[in-house]
Amino acid sequence: MPVFDQQETRKPPISQIGAILWLKTNLFSSWINSILTFASLYLLYIMIPPLLNWMIFDASFSFGTINFFGFEIKFSEEMATNDNCGRVGACWPYIYEKLYMYTYGFYPRTETWRPNTVFALTGLLFVIVPLVKNYKYKNRVTLSLIILYPLISYILIAGGFGLLTPVDTDQWGGLLLTLIIASVGIIVSFPIGVLLALGRQSNLKVIKLFSTLFIEFIRAVPLITILFMASFVLPLFLESGNYFDKLLRALIGIALFQAAYFAEVVRGGLQAIPRGQYEAADAIGLSYFQKNVLIILPQALKISIPNIVGSSISLFKDTTLVLIIGLFDMLAMVNLTSNDPYWLGRETEGFVFVTMVMWAILYTMSRYSRKLELRFNTENKN
Amino acid sequence: MSDKNTNIIEISELNKWYGDFHALKNINLDIKEGEIIVVCGPSGSGKSTLIRCVNFLEKFQEGSILVSGTELTDDAQKIRKIRSEVSMVFQHFNLFPHLTIVDNLTLAPIWVHNETKQEAREKALKLLDRVGIKDQAEKYPNQLSGGQQQRVAIARSLCTNPKIMLFDEPTSALDPEMISEVLDVMIELAREGITMICVTHEMGFARKVANRIIFMDDGQIVEENDPENFFNNAESDRLQLFLNQILTH
Ligand SMILES: Nc1ncnc2c1ncn2[C@@H]1O[C@H](COP(=O)(O)OP(=O)(O)OP(=O)(O)O)[C@@H](O)[C@H]1O
Ligand SMILES: [Mg+2]
Image 1 (cartoon, rainbow over the protein chains, first blue to last red):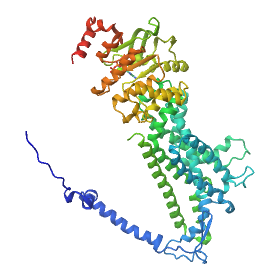
Image 2 (image 1 turned 180 degrees about the horizontal axis):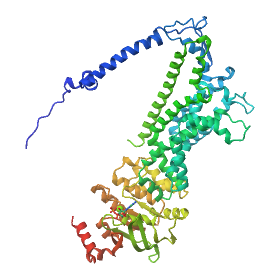
Image 3 (image 1 turned 90 degrees about the horizontal axis):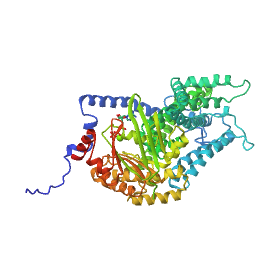
């Protein structure tokens, strides 16, 4: 019987590791790849420096007063005006001055604490939910949050009930309105979407037909059309003279629109559940309702998380369309303030700003969903 | 203990079609309480279809099935009642992957039989102990081997104190070295007097515990006999051929 020598452990050859290999395999693996690499570098070279110059090096930062979530921060005694800022770079003091309107629209300045409390509560929610994950009464906590959070938020923002000064929905605007439309749209449409998805798979022909027709109708119509219908056609069905809030009409339209998309996303998840799961659930005697709530939906929703978030992000972006029906969300506020005669020619700053805020929010959302996915996945691994 | 003279299952003139395909042809079968029935036959002969009719996972078009005196009809209430007395073990286990082992077991007792969480959990742990995997109670199904998963599935179907157990090829998705651990559990159950219908090709198991063995081919019951005569005095050629194939490899 042959006996083999003990082999010594060696490092891989130098050409097979490190930065050089990475460059070689990722950027210069072929001559086409090399051309593309140089072309991209050149594009970055002609775009980035002017952008940085405009945004930072030639820009004005330090005049006037900023109103940051209702707190006034004074940069200098000098008033911010269009002439103070040069014409070469960005004029950020313009944003400082309009920041209140971008954030709250026409919400009364004396009541800023109310939306701020809602912002804070929302932030807190994202902290609390992961914390109670292992808490004994987590179901009860989650359930009460689901009921309490929207209720408290609504009372704070709308006022009334003899507690707070009422603030009409016409005065809501800016980021506040964007967040309200997006979150109400998503939260209300989600359960409807789940029901539609189940309906589309149902054995009951009438329900199946209704769900299918609804989903296919909505998905074949642009959101703008639905918003127009909601704001002009919906009132026709209601008794005339009965004032029906413009925001509410938009929300109904958006929720129905999004429900159809969620329904398709959830249906994809449902189709991925093996038939054996349905059979096992049936065989142990669960009812239709129990089967879906306890067995099918938890699994289907889990695999749908990436698509649910993707669809929510699309909706978030689409909320900017409400400016068409005269609601003043963040983008609409930017658009509006760019007509300010004292600040002519500063619309670029506004649109760059709104782009950055949107990006920050949506990027956070997609990172958060990635974390959610990983957390749910650990259940199945060691 | 059990009354050997009452029929717990009565199947008569049962016919089932999938579309135009005649999958079950005129099946008549009475099963007494405590009987162990083994069903075998070539692939596609309708074995699964037959036992899936017994807990109404499959609907049938003609004939009748009575389970402990209740006739199977479309009535959802009745079906749930029957399913709470008849439990089923599947070829591919069909455990619920998002629930821990113990939660897989307590689901039906809590939601269908209105037991308290505490009761259900105690019973579940006892059953897991019986099938030899108590220490895995808090794990998730895909952290277990196939044999362990199938034993969990058996424990899950025992959790509701069923009168009848249906097995659809419980060992055929298992690696060879895991088959006996599952068969051992089934043999023990058989000795306790629960009524069982097993679709299986484990002829050693059939010989050991079956009261009757049924041979199906082409959607029909071709032969039915006690183990002794089934293996030694096969009447039809088809059974003879089948036995030769299955026993000689
Ligand atoms: N859902 C279905 N739709 C159409 N045909 C089906 C369906 N299920 C089963 N069949 C057909 O009915 C016949 C009997 O199927 P069944 O699953 O009962 O066979 P089996 O005896 O269990 O076979 P195996 O040993 O392969 O499990 C087969 O020919 C099969 O193709
Ligand atoms: Mg089968």
